[in-house]
Image 1 (tube, rainbow, N blue to C red):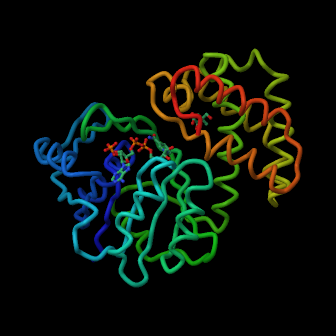
Image 2 (spheres, rainbow, N blue to C red; image 1 turned 45 degrees about the vertical axis):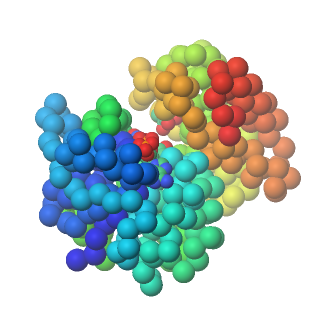
Image 3 (cartoon, protein in one colour; image 1 turned 180 degrees about the vertical axis):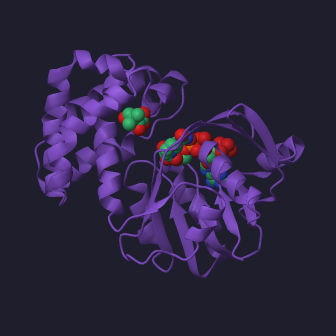
Length: 304
Ligand SMILES: NC(=O)C1=CN([C@@H]2O[C@H](COP(=O)(O)OP(=O)(O)OC[C@H]3O[C@@H](n4cnc5c(N)ncnc54)[C@H](OP(=O)(O)O)[C@@H]3O)[C@@H](O)[C@H]2O)C=CC1
Ligand SMILES: CC(C)(CO)C(=O)C(=O)O
């Protein structure tokens, strides 16, 4: 049985590693540094709370420098950490290593795929929700779906049965880039505005003109990238997400209010840089990007 190496024991890393381990599958965590490894040993394992019940999973953990080969790597870091984190373990890659990239947005996955062309890189678009309480304890906060795909190979891997055994919801798609672009477009329309207006998703109903202007430019970007059918429904999809998540704060809002670095470069930054690359004018997206960066500067948070 192939071991699942899980790089990063944050919210999604804990969620995935715990479910795989309790299905009896071999899992090893790769932690950031000796202090984190020591903290983990003191914690005695990962804790996952689901439906009010908390369970402990005593999953073995190691550092990047361990010497066992890696055949399957689940990268559960933030987009801005992913490439560096993978670089730290790359010398351990076995021939035909597979890398699953859980990052939101776009850009970090392509960076990893182009730097390690011998590995098969699978991209994951997740709508599940989890948050970290402290240390190595996460709470499962929202049912969802994990779309998996490989932009270069439409063959589904046999190990999807591991995900089924672990009751990890998943669907294989031959158009993972479309999935990721669509989620990126939704996030670009909603998340930055919630930060700038300091509001819940539902309060964006009060800003229909700003939403329409952003949706027009995001739709043009989707068309330019080969997704006219996603572009046609975008404005309505944004409205539906705002209604369905009206009482929630967006993930970017939560990051900014918790003083955490955002993934702006891989969301709005990626939309604006892709538009610039293909010569598409997106003045509203560019303006939103600048306003968001100014706000991040004022709060002392990284602007990228
Ligand atoms: N949480 C969620 O509900 C969802 C998240 N996503 C996406 O999934 C990705 C991961 O998010 P999330 O789990 O919330 O992030 P977290 O910040 O909770 O976890 C990231 C983890 O990566 C670890 N890490 C960073 N660099 C390294 C390294 N070099 N070696 C080892 N570990 C490292 C961090 O370590 P340390 O603890 O030491 O800082 C941290 O534990 C993001 O792109 C996010 O947008 C997508 C859908 C839902
Ligand atoms: C709820 C939604 C879709 C808002 O963009 C989201 O994914 C987020 O908050 O990051």
